Image (tube, rainbow, N blue to C red; front, side, top):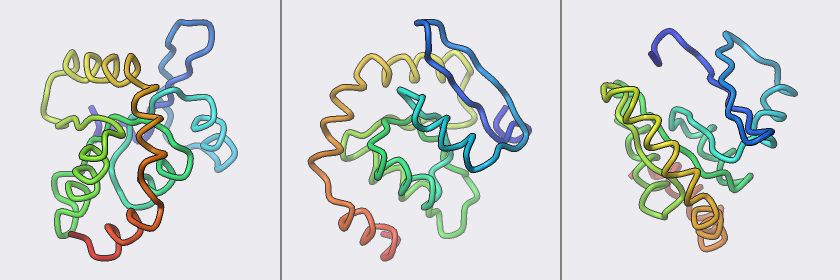
Length: 131
């Protein structure tokens, strides 16, 4: 699923959830997607995690299993250990992903409060040291 689909934008508007698979989106569209989202489903690269940290967006993270130095797993563990979202293994069933998204969405206010407990400096140090 994640190998062929680059981005999945989830729009939460009228209490219905719509999924829009797209190949590429512009910077403005990505900004709109972040602003409009209650929960983000994404890989856990350094840039994505930094954007989530700055915006205070809870997320379901799907680390690349083959990332260099296992950095995406490292970033995801940091994010999850601070109560900012949940981890999803790309080899798990789609139903598990949906349940994980629902869990993060249901507890999004708790995750959002947890963002206030962590500093951007500590995340920057995490990325720089990559440990």
